[in-house]
Length: 204
Image (tube, rainbow, N blue to C red; front, top):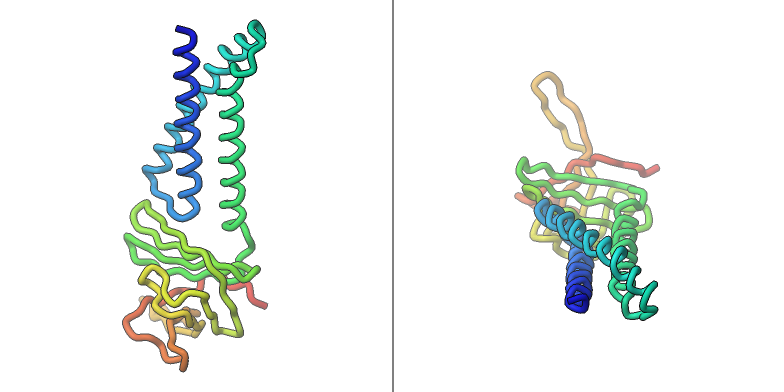
């Protein structure tokens, strides 16, 4: 009976650990509200298996001195380390300092591009709890931004962007704000394509 309990702990930690690693890796490219809930639930189950192993397998190891008793605990430590490293790598991309950030607010959906100071960008296309991320590189010269991709999720359909002033009429005032337009190689604004508001501008 003890062997069956050991096998259950081993399979439980192995299964939960692999699922959490897979989900953590996928969070780099997509996050969904329900996925985060599932991740939290699996993490609680995994923690339960780990506590069970700490109390049971460590006790068996002290009495029997068999190294295989520590396999479930060792796997849990390895999985936890991998998940931590993946999270650090993912967050390090988002935590890089921003040079320019642009955003389009579509009420139920939104699209933003975060241009980092190191020449990389993160494209975020979100809708009702779901965010999809695309990573890439860019070059900026004055008000012109050149992307390394010709299309981004069918929202950006050119690799040429340009920051231009736009007159916005509010109910009580008129203001000039900077927007980012999709343009062709000649600098002509592409009609009927998404325009982005410039929300952060750290250029000198």
